[in-house]
Length: 127
Image (tube, rainbow, N blue to C red; front, top):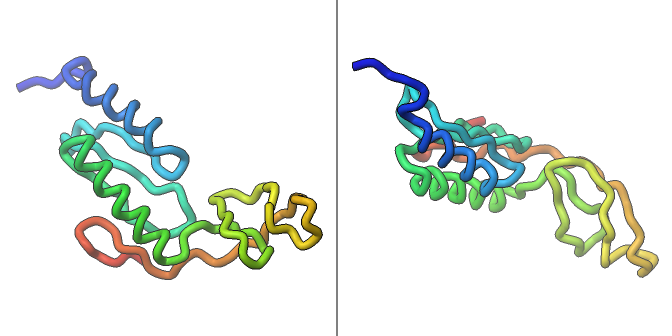
């Protein structure tokens, strides 16, 4: 049985929609060779690529990984002001509502090390 790129156009479109929906932490695509939707984590933690046969299944896997990353102290850049819960994957200035001077000034947050272990696909620990 031959394969043509146009045979999978609906899968490619579903992957594009899912990629936009997942935001900046994931790159999502359709893999015709594995006949699955795959996603690659773009954050600082070492996370194995995720794959599922359906967009809904992949989204469920990604949300599970995001919960694990958050529980492990997710976010690479954190506001240095005590009590501020802001974090980001990229270093950037942010208006801190808890700034020491009370003026809502901006600060460049200090980097913190990535978590040491995050579970990947099917419960395996990736380091």
